[in-house]
Amino acid sequence: MSNWYLQNGKDSDVVVSSRVRLVRNLKEFKYINKSSKEEQEEVLNCIKEIVPSLGYGLKYIDLDNIDNITKVSLVEKNIISPEFITNNKIKKAIIINEEENICIMINEEDHIKLQVFSSGQELENLMNLIIELDQKLGEMLNYSYNKKFGYLAASPINIGTGMRASVIVHLPALNLTGNLSKMLRIINNMGMSIKGVYGEGNQNIGDLYQISTNQTIGIKEEEIIANIKAITEKVIEQERLARKILCKNQIEIEDRVYRSFGLLSNALIMPIEECRRLLSDVKLGTDLGIIKELDDSKVKKLEIYTKSANLQKYLGKTFDGYEREIRRAEVIKQIIKE
Image (cartoon, rainbow, N blue to C red):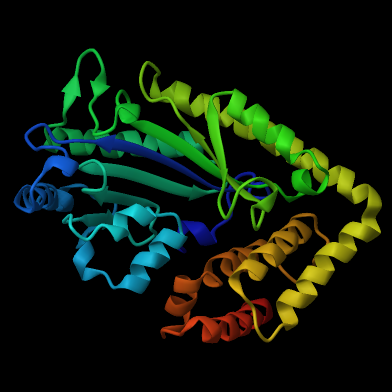
């Protein structure tokens, strides 16, 4: 089975991916920001022991045993956080499976950050999976829990269920029709946070936005998922409506996406920011059925393997900045011709 980020999911024309995460801490240990290296090692050893009993094909890997390019490639896939790989003073590990749709960060801000991922809009399925995982872990570990407040965490904003959910959405048509700012305000006013994946507002390169839940205390897991799902469905509806408006002037939208496709498939040097802009148009053109030369699978590959660390993983070699721009253009041609 291919990795989740190379698959298509429900509503993949707008929803690129979904993620649900839970934070947990172990009762017998101090929080990470107050612990010694010895205590951090104890947390790692305590959790490492139970991994064989978890199933799901999960493997334990010390972060020190992962090379830098692989670490950054996981960040580029949104599987681990940038902060997780930057602080070398803390002993850390990940527990991950082959498909990479499950990744548990050990000793990030909290002792345990459980994460599950999927392509498209699969929030309810992810909630069920993470609850199942959490129950297995909870049977083998002593979680820090308070009857009044729920699961305890290093940060007060994570107390309660410890659950957050997010989706990454592709909103090029809302941007092109001038309706994006209005949609961003609506989402913020509904108690969710939304931020550009590669920048903010109209300066967001690639038209990708992450919508995330904020509340973890005083609310059930099912409510968290229902709330973000309702907002996501509204965003999908509005983006698709904006695409219909764009298609009323068929020649202009066809010209735009084919110009981007022409540059993407013929350039000899491809900087990453230009690549993101062009890929946004090309994904839109593919989703609208305008660009026949590509399918969803190839678009997914282009989105992942043009990112700097994943590009180098794909080629099995390391390159400096300028050489990467040349290699990126070559890889784009390879994927398109497959």
